[in-house]
Each structure stands twice: as structure tokens, then as C-alpha cells.
Image (cartoon, rainbow, N blue to C red):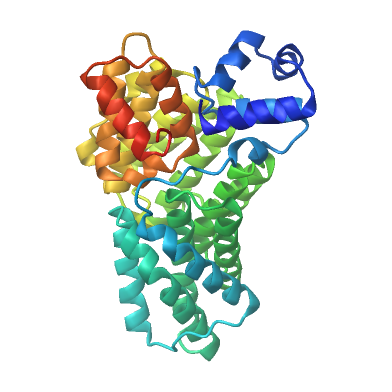
Length: 393
């Protein structure tokens, strides 16, 4: 049974509601709900999680926040979370006690950290992040090179702190602290690119809490449009992709497709870019098409799109791991594709173990695959992957 499925059953039982009642309120069949609870079907769509939460009168994160089981050998990044938390709290209080550093040093350190994040080197990011947060905020308080440091704060907190916390499976509330600090710095700057970067981070924090309408507003308010430079055009593309995910989560089919088509048109003009480490371009739009199709429950469509994307053209290991992970998720739900699904997920794991082991949607997918596991070579691969993800002891 998956963590999410187990939690779903616990909440339903605590509420004293039957399978039939909850299923009816959520718009699914009792047998399908039973399979979700047992792990025979993956609960990996935000829209369905929201529907079930409404049926159970709980917040969506009550279902998804079941703690992940410890994986064998505590990862180094886990030990860094406490120091990152303290650095974020101190920054929020205006009480950072780092070093006042020169702009050149801060710029080099921030760029190096963001490169490590894109390379999925989460242990190094976790080790460097607390000091960088403290030093950036301390240096800002000195008042020298203020605008340049504010720009570094925006990109570091969204593409470094928030992204790192999400990839290692840390709590959403801690990532929200990073998004809030980025938004404050962007508002002080009042520049289109920084507002767009912080808007992306804020929107994803809201999506994680199922605040889809608020996320949509943030995206609309911070989209820089396409009339400025190439960097702003790429950020407009990223926010358009975010809009497509929100629309899929809310079941707005036409809006989802329109946003994806608009993003593809922008990518055709920008080419394979990497402004602000987002990697916007035709290949990345393809990966987003996969993720959005999965959110809409269109697994065959996600697999079809995957076959059109060249993963070698993706600009970073983070995007390549996302490609193989989403491809595996799609194939896991298609008849007679179990073996290929496991192999795709293993490719994602080799690039970035944390993005597979620590993702609650992936736990649900692995639980569904385990329910149909055989005693063969692929079954052994699957059980090894499940063990490393904390699903088997």
C-alpha cells in the first residue's frame, strides 16, 4: 500500500465514511477508490486529490503529507534541512548573522550553487545553501550593491532554496518561506524578470497547497509578456506552462491546450534557452506537455508526447530526470508496458535518486506497479527501486 493510499484510508475511516459515500462525492466508483487506497491504482493527480479532500472535509495536504519512510542510509541533504530552516527564519526576521561579502563573491557562489542544483547534486547544495542565504541577506543589509544582491536573492531562493527543498521532499511550508523571501526581494526591485521568477515560485507554492485560483492570479500578475528581451520572453513561456498545469488541475481542457500551444509558439522563437536556469525551449515544453497530460489523466497522450522529445536536448540533468520519470509514470498506467515503465523510472533514478525516492506521486505509482510485480528480472528491479524509495523493508 502506498503512503498516500494508506493515509487516504486512515482519514476516511476516522471520518466514519463508507467507500460508497466518499467515492460518490468525489465522482469516482467505490471500486476505484478501494484500489486507490490499496495502492493498486496510483493517486498522482492533483485534481483527484482535491476532489477526495473535499469529500472527506479535509485540506488536500492532509492526504499527501504522509511522511516518507526513511531511505536506507540517511542522505546528507536531510541533515542540511535544519540549517536551511534556521537561515530562512533568520532572514524572515531580518536577523541574518552571515558575512558581508562583495558582489563578485556572492555572484560566483550563487551561480555555482544553481549549477549544482541543476546537476542534481543535492548534498552539495544543502551544504552550501545555509551560509549563502545568511551571507546574501547580511550583505543586503549593508546597503551596497543593493539591487544586484536583490536579484541574486530572487533567483537563489526560487531556483536554489525552493527547488532544492522540493526535490528532496522537504515540507511545503518551508519552501513557502523561500518563495515569500523571493517575492519580497522582487517587489523591492519591481523589475519584470525578477517579478516573473518570484511569480513562478509563488505559483508553485500555491499549487502545492491546491490554491489553484490564487496561483492563476499570481501567474497573470507577474507575466512579463513578450515585448521585452529574450530573458523575459522565456520567463513568459515558463509562466504560460505553469498556467497550463493549473488549468489541467482544474479540469479546464481548452485553456490547458491553449496555454501549451502558446508556450510552444514562444519556444519556437526562443529556441533551446536557459535563462535563469529554467531551461525554457521546445524540448522542455515537451516535458511539460507530458506532465500536464498526466495531470489530466491522459496517460497514452503523455507517452505519445514522450516519443517526440529528444531528452539529450534538455539543458540539465534535472529536466532529463523529469523526462524519464514522467515517461515511466505514463507507461505504468498503460496495458502491457510494465517492463518499459520500470526501466524508464530506473533511468530517472540513476540521474536523480531524490526526484524518484522523495516524490509522493512516485510512491503511489511504485505501489501500483508493486501490486502487479512478478518474480522476474523486471520485478527484481522494481522491488529494488521500491526499497530505495522506502516502500519496502
